[in-house]
Amino acid sequence: MRYVIIGGVAAGMSAAMEITRTDSKAKITVLERGQDYSYGQCGLPYVINGVVPDIDKVIARTVETFREKYGIDARTFTEVIHVDEKKKKVYGVQLKTGTALEIDYDRLLIATGSDPVLPNWKGIELDGIHPLKTLIDTKAILQDLNNKIKNVTIVGGGYVGLEMAESFHSLGKNVTLIQRSDQLATIFDLDMATIIHQEAEKHQISLILGEEVEGFSGDKRVNTVITNKGSYSTDLVLLSVGVKPNTDFLQNSAIHMNAQGAIHVNAYMQTSIPHIYAAGDCAIQYHRVKQLDDHIPLGTTANKQGRIAGANMAGNPLTFKGIVGTSIIKFFDLTLGRTGLTEKEANHLKLPYAVEVLEANNQAGYYPDGETLHIKLIYDKNSYALLGGQVIGKKGVDKRIDVLATALYNKMTVKQLLDLDLAYAPPYNGVWDPLQQMARKI
Image (cartoon, rainbow, N blue to C red; front, side, top):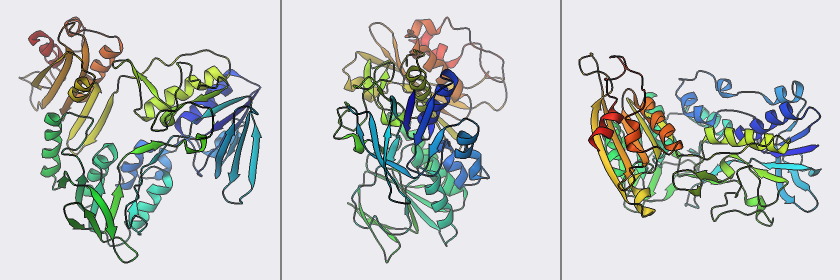
């Protein structure tokens, strides 16, 4: 069986490894546009500020390992430009030589991930303006920081924007963060985001909210960011305004995609063409709480979808059970966690929801050095089914978010939270966990 995988990072190589485990006679070809395989993109902000001391630490397996140990034809600098689903052929080009490629397949996986959004802003081509998505991006930023960089401007207040604000601050840079909406971290509701704003200001991050970037100016190198309301001097710009599925090469194919270019897949990760599969940031995910297809690109999901796609391609039927929208971010002294629906999302879906909020100690009240947890629960006011939760604090956030994520996955109600046998000892919890305190109150 000839397997071709387009994309050599999370989903693609999870699939490749699952195929090697399942089909001992597999002939696997992987086509990667860049030069690096199987690395942790989420670790890149921590490489930049030196918390992760060596960029090689985020590489799970090198391309040489896949070739020599697993017998995979792992190619680099190979860009796919067309897929012919009728002839079962992939067409591409070797970027270094310009040589055209034509490869036959029996099973095809599209695992091309996502690309950073780079708006058509005036001056975006100036030196000193960087995205952060790949190892090459990371090396470029590290190299640029060797220049006399004092003032850094981050455009976008999502996951990467927040993590990089902390990263640059820890390097002694003056950080300005520009966000076009009225809040950072729009995956949280505004009342919870206010806590994030306070943390940013506490660490001297200059917040510019409600302004849209229109362009950049400078002589070869950027020195000014121009918005619809003003201009800001800078030495370096990080662009973090979102990502888009890397699927433009499929526009003339029969593969079904949504309006944003994310590929529709079923539970077996098959596309609308049965012998073509898709996984990771370029594919949609079924949201178990919304009961709708969604697109929330995260590394955890990419690895799961890749494994399931590889198993199915090799004849071992597995199904992807869906997501509940769980994520967590470190931001200075705070941990920001969320899962399920926000109040904004519940309102958009016209669900009959209610909200409960609580400030609680992360541990027993009498035990020293406790920290406040800010918790928000969203639930169905008729059935009491859990819909979502947001938790922000210094300690114990991950514990509560994972409990809520598990509860959401299993479609539990608020009342059923009271029956959970959760871990208790004074350094970690009170006899009633804050989530159970909220359930009692509701």
